[in-house]
Image 1: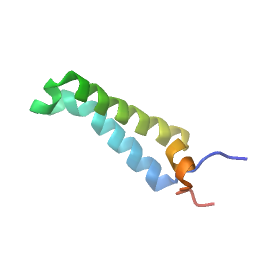
Image 2: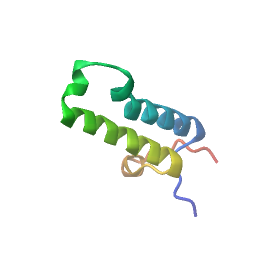
Image 3: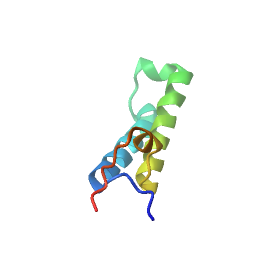
Length: 71
């Protein structure tokens, strides 16, 4: 029995967005990044996206009954 509920397209999008969110404060100079709390929060969201993309499991999807993985 597989717990995977994240499909391939969803997985790739999550990983790419996660990488962008983690790297953004280091490559884009925005006033937004001066607030350390916001910067850390955005990077945590990026890490969660990468984690869910790699593991192919999203707890939020499970909670609301969404499954983008096609058998």
